[in-house]
Image 1 (cartoon, rainbow, N blue to C red):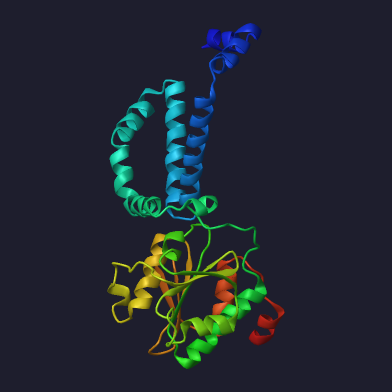
Image 2: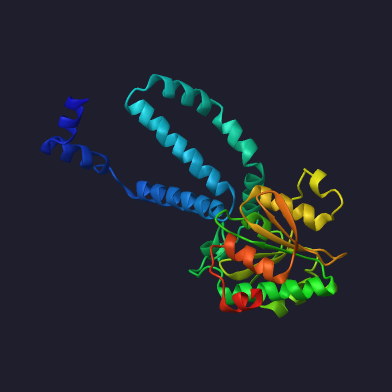
Length: 287
């Protein structure tokens, strides 16, 4: 190992090692690299806004550990990881089946006019959910609770849920109590689906969320509550539900459903989950 490093970093050998691959470099190689880079960029953009992104980061970390085991000849680690990666392709196909299917559908409907947006939505640099936006959200939930207007709102956090947003209509609008109430008014086309909030804005509406298979804790509740728990099981999103029958406000986080919130307790809980400070208005209400 020491001799190898000495050879690699000796002056003439190092220069030879670096320049050798570029001696026969031609236009075909440049196009090949460009296409490969474009492919990797498209895959990155596609998984960035989906839960699969976190899983791939984990797989990448395992790959790095495997590389270290090979480099330093750790027999035990190398044996375990080589056995794991032998069946890795089959496992990846099974795990990422929904994402692979969605990606193939996108390839089939690809248009060169949308080349700049391939695989993802346009991502802007935005601030987190502001105190004013949270107040508007809580106000909308309060009014819908009084009116017994059914609603389900997902606040996206670190795990992206772009695959759910694709099932609805992209809005990309400021958070407004009136807009949220309008979306969930029972005569509008989007009222049956969920609203997804991303980066402090209403990102999409009319979205389908996955239903939980664990119906025992919520067997007396409706589809909105099952969808809220299901989405919170698959991600770290915060899901707000307003019951259409009773007007009760519920909150689903990490597969658990919490019920019977008031507007004040909901504002406080959301502030805690989002790492926000209490507002002066909220403190006045509690006194």
